[in-house]
Image 1 (cartoon, one colour):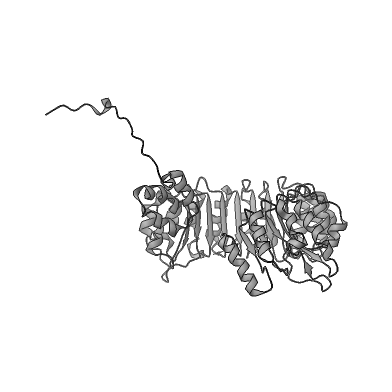
Image 2: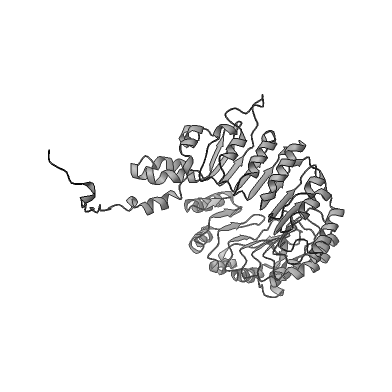
Length: 494
């Protein structure tokens, strides 16, 4: 038998395989795959072995959502399929009656959503419980929980406390009414950076709260938390002295808000820049908080009694505020909105009520040239239609604008001010050609009479337009034909 040379001694000259079809390039395939839904990616796997190997990770890289209704083979969401491809899964949502049956090690898993779902009637947890799922996945960074009270027991929270990389817990519509379970939960929060509690119920003693060490907490949201009175919640906030963002919604707040303002004045939270506060706080109490705050960059005081006193206090933050939400504040006047647009150079998002076109024209120049989202009802009197081009020209200066809602979030108007921004070319729409970043346009709360030429202008001028909202023309047949043009271009109807 002839001797064969050692493999290491062989010199192999690779042969270049010519690529005659651009779709054979992996870069092109991955680019295409990034735009496809999971079911379309599944079809692409059948093209060839090369496509299968390249695109399979993309199927599992997208959010994997499981529920009792969606557990069907074409989507590959059966427990055994998840475990077979576990190394690709990064974001997992389990909305199932028995979430423990999906317990496995997912090496790249960083976000986990649990619920809503209920355990079987016998309240047993076959095939492992949620504690195992947590312990098997130390890579978790975020856990989002909704309506899973039966599972949220002390062993589960002990496992959560042991996750080395966990930064965020979000809980909604859950009840923890056992004292040991509640204590285990609060202890697990000591390593958190972000905590969001929405419509949750906790049985918790104030002495447990005051013993917590929450110095790692950067963002805290307390949205109508039950069984924790206002002062217990304030004591929780006081434990988070490195807070950067606070969202606090409570039903009764007279005493707590006043004490919160005093704590602000004493610089208890030196890093706090984002503030979102409760409903129906009086103008005077809001002013006290705004006066006490050192430096606000994000301010959400929607549905509060924001008025002339708090407006005066808010001026000291005009040079730093980037996001401002005044929606639903009945005391906000058109002059206040115009002053904000003329005084906040770093403003990026503004939500408000009504600003009159005449106040814009007669007021000073806007300095918020970095604005990306404008949701304010721009209103014209019946004899003020000649102001339309001037308003379009003013908006055209906001060259960074991505989201425009000229009807704002207003669902009523005074009778003498019924006319809104008219999105037609002969009224001045063409001035907005400079807004190359436009992605979202809402015509809600406005009366529009657009025609095909306006729609084609938008598609040609706003290449990044993705979503349009509202009625484009008051005649239904014309409105539907305009929508056909937008949908054919891939623009979504919201």
